[in-house]
Length: 159
Image 1 (spheres, rainbow, N blue to C red):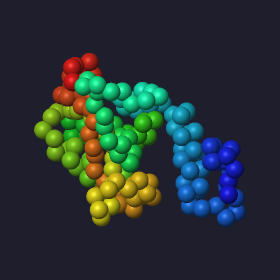
Image 2: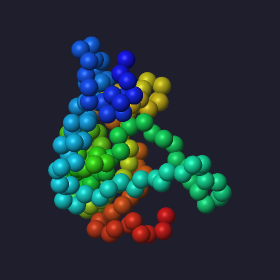
Image 3: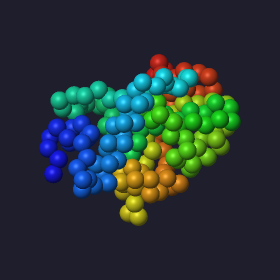
Image 4: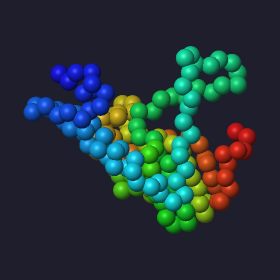
């Protein structure tokens, strides 16, 4: 069993390492590699929630469901569609259903912040399916924010 340090850093593999640990090590290597890479041209970071000790209350707050998937910035520019992860890695090849849906949009361009999700037979999000690439062709996008539409930056527009 890995100790606390190994769980936090996921860099040490034991001879009988499980597939999960191997994937975590690969993810850490990718994160280290991608951290040194420049962000793609026109990349817009996702709108991330602020951490708080307690959920806010009142009529002015909206609480969203936690979808168990990959955060994605979907960008359409004329006929070209690209999907990016939170740190800016290209995920376009992973999710053909999302790419096809964005390509069919009538807008000239758009940027959508959302979550790529794959559900099981009961309709429940399954992170294992998306993480282990078991069902990439059936992954869909829960859209959170429309960041840009036909060249207009909507980040400062009222909700």
